[in-house]
Image 1 (cartoon, helix red, strand yellow):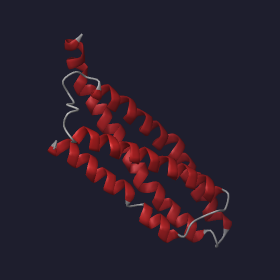
Image 2 (cartoon, one colour; image 1 turned 180 degrees about the horizontal axis):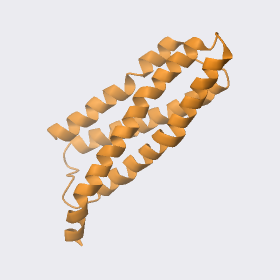
Image 3 (cartoon, helix red, strand yellow; image 1 turned 90 degrees about the vertical axis):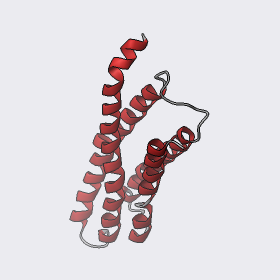
Image 4 (cartoon, helix red, strand yellow; image 1 turned 60 degrees about the vertical axis):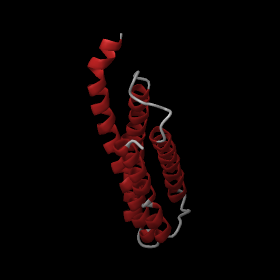
Amino acid sequence: MIDGLALIYPYVKAFHVMAVISWMAGLFYLPRLFVYHAERRRESAEPVASFMIMEQKLLRLIMNPAMIATWISGLALVMTPGIVSWDMTWPWVKAACVIAMSVFHMWCARERRHLSAGMARAGRSYRMMNEVPTLLMVGIVTAVIVKF
């Protein structure tokens, strides 16, 4: 059984990296769409309708599946024997940052619903929130590469 896991491990890891890249791209882009949406909502209705479609499709068709694929492949990697030593700090830091990233994803989904209902924050708020996934990514990548 261990030999079978050793054979598929690199493929699961490759899939995990692709899923993370897709998820992160959405997490970087969706708050930016929110900025444009919030700043243009007082202008004509046509651009706002376009933003609503883009936001909804990005979240539903790219971000949600990418997050699910990231979690499933990440848990498969963690459960592979000998890969993670839980007596070190780095897996706990990575886990906390991934959970925080998932919470941010849920915040984005809630904000999309609020924007669709006409309840938007100021564009500046979305600009500041756009930095959250970057900070979490720094924590995740540093933990995984440095393995402190």
